[in-house]
Length: 164
Image (cartoon, rainbow, N blue to C red; front, side, top):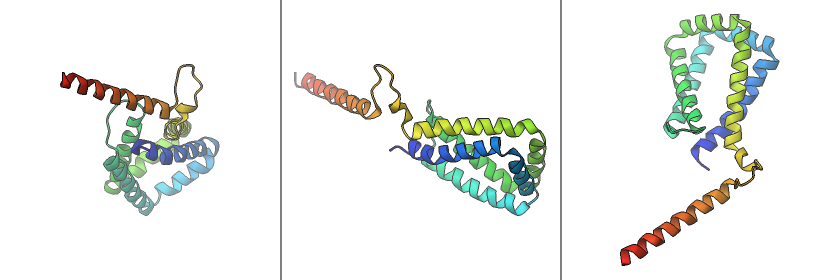
């Protein structure tokens, strides 16, 4: 299992649950956010935890290649930035957070975005694409085996050319 898949298997389900909680329990979530934003100690502590988790992701997975794996890298960097801002500028985080959560649509939009990203990460992390029954599409292990055999055939052909 690659690091991308491992991180996606952890982050995906968490993001799905948090996003759905934001959508289906908006009143309670808004109350939690208000209480959280009134506590500088909680802002600071969440900054430390978010910074540590973000650094762990970025150190293990700082890949800027295309595809879904870039979501893991972006998530890690957003966590690093968010954690650092909570530690360095807790008062500004309180003001910005209060202004954001004052708008009812913000919570719905954030809930949808977090849920969709969580679904994408969970789907990719748990190999959901191998369960698609698309004609002509092989499962992931078969694709890897085919790639290995093509590589082996290519190496054998190169050795034969070198012998001549």
